[in-house]
Image (tube, rainbow, N blue to C red):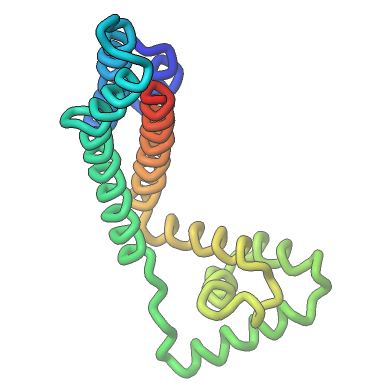
Length: 195
């Protein structure tokens, strides 16, 4: 087993075995190419330029760079589909009820009236979910809170509304991100072997 694969694969939970297989396949491609490049470089019948050209032709030939690209594309497509699903699941619906809209506007006005340090505490300690909804249903400037905090509150609301579905998506996104990072390492290794 490739030593880098041995350190990267455990970062992807075992329950995502197809993803682990994709990462393993990516490193197998690198190992196969390293072996092929070594045999080309050891060929005494080729000049230095001939060896270099043969190695470049091999990496760009079938089974190496294109196969690695296909694995990356597959994982990126899975990541995009998951992000799209998450966006649909956690999409904030605009407030159409005039009373709720006015109440949220008043909550945001109250938050802005608090000192900067107290705003976060007020939102975090709020027992009324309407306070959190007021924060996420309008641009962050209207509540006087920063965008990262607003996103975190939105995430909390989504988890509260959709329970384990959002947690599962977050876990899958993390696994896909780890897989993409591992594939990037494999791609860099393939380029290094092709030099």
